[in-house]
Length: 298
Image (cartoon, rainbow, N blue to C red; front, top):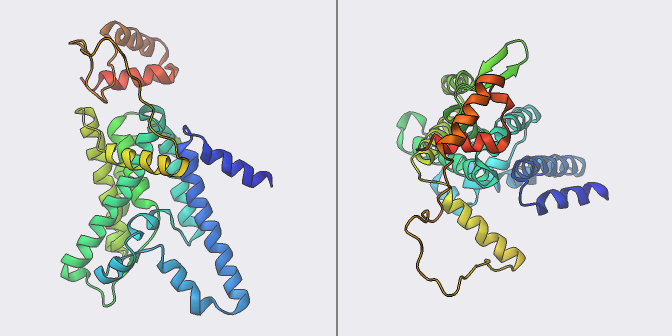
């Protein structure tokens, strides 16, 4: 069917990280909906469905986590409520597109994964170290909210003055959207959703630190990217490509460090700033926006 071909094509492209993240969340949600419907029709829902979800959601109980260690990641792709996944995917699409435009596909994926892990860590620490949060048998966490909150906070830290046009509110700067997201997370804690609220805050902290470290020249996403490259090689069987230059083994003194991105010259930045003053920020091309961001890392 063409639908399956479209999905396969989407995952085969290397420059399609945002769509792939959206699809992964959507496919897991659809699979759970179909499994639930089948089990209800066959009368096995109460007996088996909770165990299916248990394989994906993150438990606060350490013993259960040891039996299901993969859930520190799978929970961030799992939703059971339609409106839960709808709002998460909308935010992922809007803010993920911004991160992808400025930082690229690989850093978008790194932010999502690290945000999910940070949310899981804060959730686990809180429910195992804070006596007021202790629950007999533990509680569980699922949803992409922590990962998405990391992306929202990263966008707000990177481009605090960037504006979104919101229905009923008009133009709103990202920094205010991020502040509301944090406030809603605190409100969630007060209303009994301690796990979700804490996970959101963990993701927000990660998003902020990620951008600040990137601006300081340190990419916290490199381990995630390295693991992703290893998995890709394992699945595809393609080795790393290496380029060897013969006859000249001495690198020039001005060669950039490994992994560094060449920063634009001041003349280029001046031209970009002139363009902003004439036509506004939105008139910049993707390449010009990236040059402006790299210049801010100086």
